[in-house]
Length: 368
Ligand SMILES: *Cc1c(COP(=O)(O)O)cnc(C)c1O
Image 1 (spheres, rainbow, N blue to C red):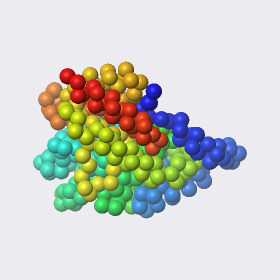
Image 2 (image 1 turned 90 degrees about the vertical axis):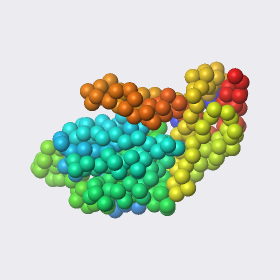
Image 3 (image 1 turned 180 degrees about the vertical axis):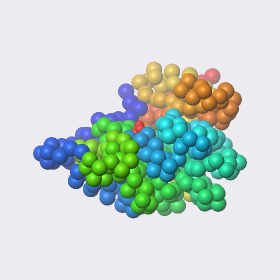
Image 4 (image 1 turned 135 degrees about the vertical axis):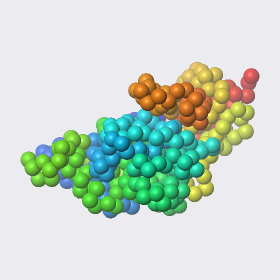
């Protein structure tokens, strides 16, 4: 059996450090907004190369609270990828703004800057590129357009913590970056968590109030806020894991390179192609094939976990039925939804497991 993602190995590897973090927080008697959160925020900002980090309850709320801190709301348009996890869209519609979906590039999963240019209108307030599967979007082109039109850019870094564009970390490339620490992400908590990274001190200050009932001073509420906080326990666990993130991402790159090698030349199988300027962190290793159903069956029969990210694009979800995007509105996103398959990936995936997966894929697709 080869699981899609091996979650238990992380605890096995870091048990001593994680257990010590647990004991430290339990014995402190302080569980929300304390020293661990403050320390983690400093360490994570340093890791990302930003001046500020504000931790929040999860990745969705990180995206949403940035839009609120920027006063994005009804009547405003936010450009989002047609090919993304639904959370990206949910953040925009949560603040009452309008999603303007833009298709991905022909060869990759991320926002196509050329199509982006044609989607900008006088109502556009922000662009929300997603670094999907751990592959950074074309931030140089996106920022050039944003600067030309006076738009703000919030990166959705949920799948790409540690990735770089020409040496600079994701989360430091736009005016804000929204991060998720859901357990399966490249750096995940043992529960929910999220954060915003930014160089904008005023936005960071407002986020600190927004996440805590709109309050800076206890029982003094300067605006109508929310309850969206990372707790001390998760912050303590994340401090332990952050020290290992670059090494784990390096291990993911080794896994991806071995997949590239072992899966080369299989008929009807498209492998991920990452642009030269990007340093990906391989949150997922996503192949494409028109024969996906057969391939999934073969992997399942061999005891190999494989998943589809994502089977239904946001515009075809019932949740967005009222937006009036019929099938065929975003053909590239729709084709990806029909052909993508994520193979097992993670820092603890062993070379013989990779070879086994590749062998099953080859056998399934080389027979007619
Ligand atoms: C996981 C994810 C989110 C949301 O993060 P949560 O912490 O689960 O709220 C947002 N965007 C993308 C692309 C994600 O993969």
